[in-house]
Length: 121
Image (cartoon, rainbow, N blue to C red):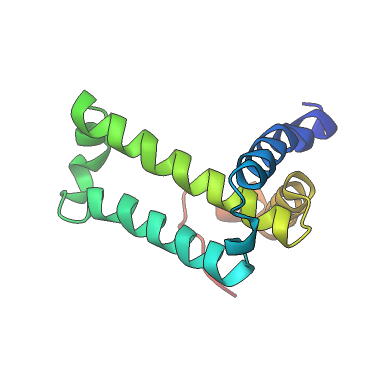
């Protein structure tokens, strides 16, 4: 897998959201606090879709068309707000994601955690 290409894939959405915001003169509303609250709100909307689903049936129920479309929409909202927040804070989302992933791989070596739920340390 080419890490550089994967990291750059966020660039397209960053520019899309930057242009979308600028064209509507919404940059004035896109301070970090407001974007973070919008992101949390969207995560809440996704959580609401799963709130009362039995855990052992959630994946199957979420694959049904009526719920699956709503899940896709909420995840899309979450990603777009996250991309916009990263842009406003001048965070390279691809690099930050790859760096975090690399640290998780190091922190949780396969041989020592396979089949076990991760624990905070």
